[in-house]
Image (cartoon, rainbow, N blue to C red; front, side):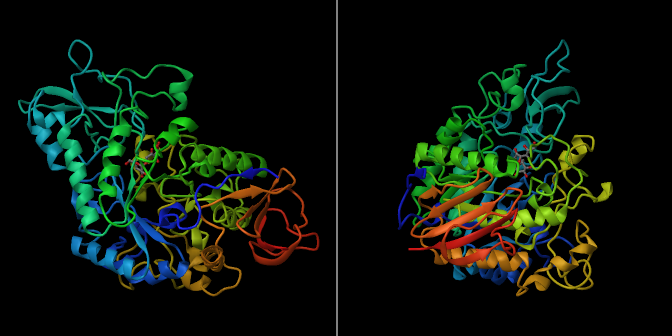
Length: 552
Ligand code: TEU
């Protein structure tokens, strides 16, 4: 038996073992009847989230935004987009969530803002070399007339990472950097005003009761001095060693932010979106004076299977142990194809930039595996994220008509990479046909069309139904709360077939996930607490998981 040491013991802060429910506000519930989800819709559905049994909610960006990238283009960090509601409603929502015992994590987008942000508008109106431009990354172009971009960096959404502006006198002028869409200019984090502004924005939301922040692209804020070309090396192409990612200077920012959250009462947290492959470099973000947690994306990338997933779990445990931080397991979010769909494909791994749309999938298989995956991730040490709709077993909507797609990635990649609208389709709540209770009767159609087949997946259809995904999630989360060894703390592998993941937690709890192609016997146990599917005469069938109370 391989024993993996404990990280912390009982009494550890809430976020080390929290289950966080991710609410994509635009697609959760529409209170105003315009076909777009909003804060009123979330408030009406808060009891649903409480009943699910999670500890906290992370809200995707709700700020004033032209919505060029689903709100990740922020025009005002201190107010709510009118499509979603008002600041007073966000405050009321936070209070109501707290009353129900749910913490609130706000999404903060510090790498870039909207091109409509007053600072960027002021930068456009000002001249090269001005203080206004210094808040962003403006540079002269290359070539005799400056008509080539300042360097060879590409945007994450395709095309150059630079856009040229027209100066006030009408002449072609400087270029500005945008690692994402042109509507998302990157801030210059070497600028003291930028740092002070974000500290003030953090305080603004902390003062309104936020329990923490999910930090967008937390590895990209600082760029290499001189903005050098991306070297044509394999490492740079593979995503390591890029001059616009994971620069050492970024850690000073997280130390500053940590000082801010630490100065508030209660355990306020910083959760980073850190897509850094190198394990040791990833761990640096989680040092005790930096971020509290970061998404553990390894299972999103990993193919389904005992061998690769055991490796992911071990590597993640070792990585987090370097700095004493908890893992935060993720299966799906608003950027990746839903795992019911991924797990039904021949290739179950995921990576950005690999065309995935329309790859055949077996949804029944994917659903069976998704059920097992819920038992796996919620039994692993650390915290976990549940993306809205995971608990309903929603699949990726792959046949959206081109004209309704809104993801800038879809447009800028010339329709080759369209992975992100299909996981953002509005939630089905009730009834037999779209909008499935997402909006009240008579409202505008949902901003993305829902598949008619979701009729069987509405929350109403699933609540109380014994074998539904929703019932499974509720049972799993209830048991997780009731079982002291789960969440943060030690785990130990038990001997098993390499294609079976079997481990124990705490005092007499075991999780067994069978990813082999045959049924396997369960270890001796007192009680089967929960199984993701029916057992058979030989024990635990393929792609099925069980939670057990072991013989004492
Ligand atoms: O995502 C950042 C990010 O790097 C990826 O998830 C991104 O989709 C991928 O790299 C594309 O190649 C965050 C948000 O989660 C995403 O929704 C935003 O679009 C992005 O930042 C920009 O703010």
